[in-house]
Length: 426
Image (cartoon, rainbow, N blue to C red; front, side, top):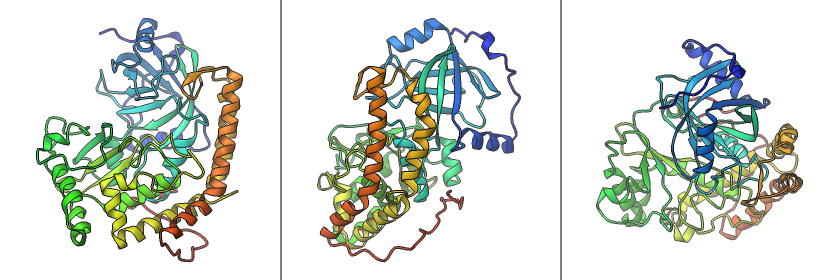
C-alpha cells in the first residue's frame, strides 16, 4: 500500500486523542450553520488520477486530511454515489480508520457530496434540517470548499455518516442492526417469500453485524405488511416498524416534493433501516435528499398505491389521519414566503454564492456546461425553491382536503421537538 505523501502545505501537527468534550466542540464548529468550511486532501497525484479515471469503482486510496488545525495522515478516500458519480468532481467517502486506528473529531468517516444532481447545492441540507425539526434522526450537514493537492475542486456538502456514531448520538444505542437500502428496481415492499436471504443483503444491505445480518425479522416485517388483516395491521406491523416515525418521515419527503425516496417512480430508494438492539422493532432513516423541491405541484402520494406499506397505511383511518396531520406540521415548520425555510434558502444561497460561482466543475442536468450557464442554473434553482416554499402549503392542503382531511387550527408556534434520547432539536 502506498502511503500518502506529506506535503509542505500540511505544516500542521498531528494531534493527540481528543477528550469527548473537545470532540463535541469541534463537531459543533464543523457543523456551525453560519460557517463555510475548507477541507484539504493531499493524495498521490497518480492515485487521484486513478480515482477519477475509475470513478465508478469503490477502490480506496490513502490521503492526508486537513481541516482547521485538525490534521490526519493516511485516511482512505473513494468515489461514492450511484447516479451522481463524476470524474472531474467526484463525490467522496472519507474513511478515517481505513488504514489506521484513528478518529477525526469523534468521527470514523464522513461524506463529501458533489451536489451534481442539485443545481442549487442546498436541497439536501435544507431537507435534513426539516427532518431534524420534525424530531427524526438525520445527518448534520454543512458546506465547504474542497481542495485536492492545493487545487480547488469545488463546493461540497460535508455530511455526517449514518453509522454507529450517528446512532449513538440520536438513539442512545448502536448495537442493533443497521441496513443501507440497496436499490432494487420496482421493489415496493412486496412479499418475496419466507427465505430471509431474499431481503438481505439486498435490498437491506447490512452496515453493522455484516457477518450476521439476522434478516429473519425483516422477512417477518414484510410478511406482516403484506398479509396482516386490515384490523390487525397497526399492531402486527408495529411489532417490527415504528409506524408513526415512518409516517412522519413520509410526510417530510412528500411535502418537499421528493421524487427519489420511498415513493420513487422506480421503487423504494435512499433510506436506511435500523432495528433496535434486542428487539424486532426498527425504523427508517432518510438518506440523500438532493432530489427534493422537484415540482411545486408534485402529487403528495405519487405511487402510493404501488407501495404496499404506504397503501395499507393510507387505508387505515387512524394512520391516514396521523400522516395528514404530520404533513401539515411539516408545512407549519417550513413556513411560506418569508418563513423559516425561505429565509434559510436565501441565507445559504448568499453564503455559497461566491464559492459556487468559482466552481468550474459544476454540471448542468447530468452534463458538463459553461460556467456562465451553471451559475445561471444555480440562481434559477434557488428562485424556484423559494417559489415552491411559498406555494406548496396551499397546493398540499387542497390535495389533502380532496382526500377527506379536515385540518385543525394550527398553533401560532409549532411545538419544539426532541430526539429519541431527549436532545432538543434547534
